[in-house]
Length: 146
Image (cartoon, rainbow, N blue to C red; front, top):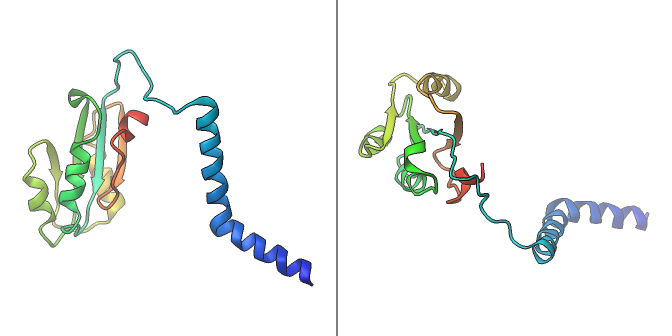
């Protein structure tokens, strides 16, 4: 019975904390042995890509998301941005419209996120499409690493 108790306790601890701790130390060990990974050199050849952001009533976060999205490391002539704000009843579409680098696709009807993204995909003419939510902040090198 004691064995079962300690085994169960270990499983719960490992599930919530142990895996993360183990992964942290394995990553540190890998960096010590192999060094830190750099940004891959692809000879200056970058595929075109479009960042699609779905936003519904995200007035509190949208400006931060726009600033984050526009600050991502990627050649400016190879990246485009589309923000979809279908059904938003707050100032989200107005805030997005203030940035000319971003194509705003707004429709007053709320048909759901999937319908909005399908509609936005008809405007994508790049090699790669990257989907992200309005409340997700990306690492500066996320596009390069993808």
